[in-house]
Image (cartoon, rainbow, N blue to C red; front, top):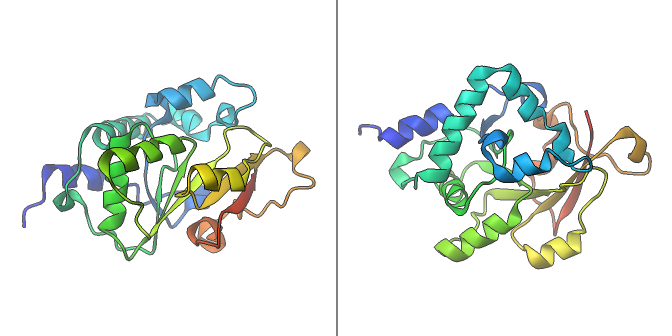
Length: 217
């Protein structure tokens, strides 16, 4: 069967050779420089987004910036069909290692990709959970069982309350917070940080919401 145009575009959008702590993983991401929420948060002195590594990398590497811009266009403006989704021959996969959710169509596309690859455990990081809630209501969709949603705290050194998150956003599986060295002394820094492949804390569901804490690099 001939590949659809969108399938070819999606295959090109996936990054199969991640580096750093994501080495060995594949990822599908959009650009924070194309996301109004991200741009606004980067201006805040108290938001972790002020330290955005993705923005720094895109300013340094034009090819990365152009790819993430194309990804944003594809995932936020094109409604993917089942025939557009490639088979991902891997155990783990990450959504948004560079950017964040822009709109409800992006959520619907991510849900479809997960549904079409039920053998693969997928994780989505976001600071915009209301977009997921809106997508579930708008499209009448449910979060796939193999998708783990991790809610990242916008504020540096300030964790979200897990119970409150669970009540408002029951689809969230884990809460993620970044701490600097000054505020991490009495915090359980349980993120492997250097290697997601050996840590895998974010890729396994626990009973209720699990706190995951990372040290600012």
